[in-house]
Amino acid sequence: MNKALLGAAIFAVAVISMGMTEQAFAQYMGNVDKESGKTGKNTLEEALKLQRERVESAKTNPSTGSGTPYLAADGVLGASAIAAAVFGGIAAAFFFRSRTGRYAAQGRG
Image 1 (tube, helix red, strand yellow):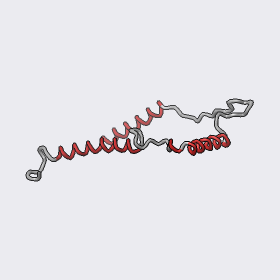
Image 2 (cartoon, one colour; image 1 turned 180 degrees about the vertical axis):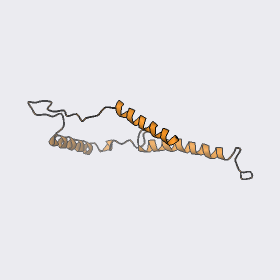
Image 3 (tube, one colour; image 1 turned 90 degrees about the vertical axis):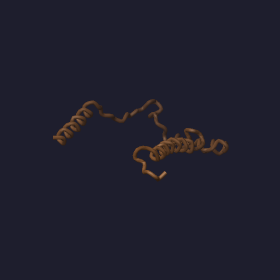
Image 4 (cartoon, helix red, strand yellow; image 1 turned 120 degrees about the horizontal axis):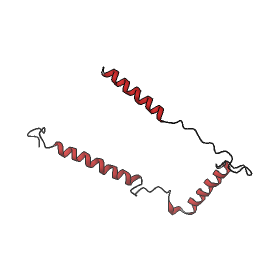
């Protein structure tokens, strides 16, 4: 009985979710400007020009770095330190909590 009820519940959720969602289609922008033939996307030449400008800007300003803030709170090391502090604090709380209480082994600390 439980398996039949579980199967019916899963089937009902699947049917409801299919009925409530719509299909998503990729949007083709077409020609934005018909006279010049622009499609709203960068051409290969425009993308290469933009990348060359970025490389030149990085070469002329070497002190700006890569743009990745390693020590900021939203950077790589900052986020790692925050995550380590949070999960380390939770682990320490569980560890110290397990040392005392009803089920702690007598005579072991």
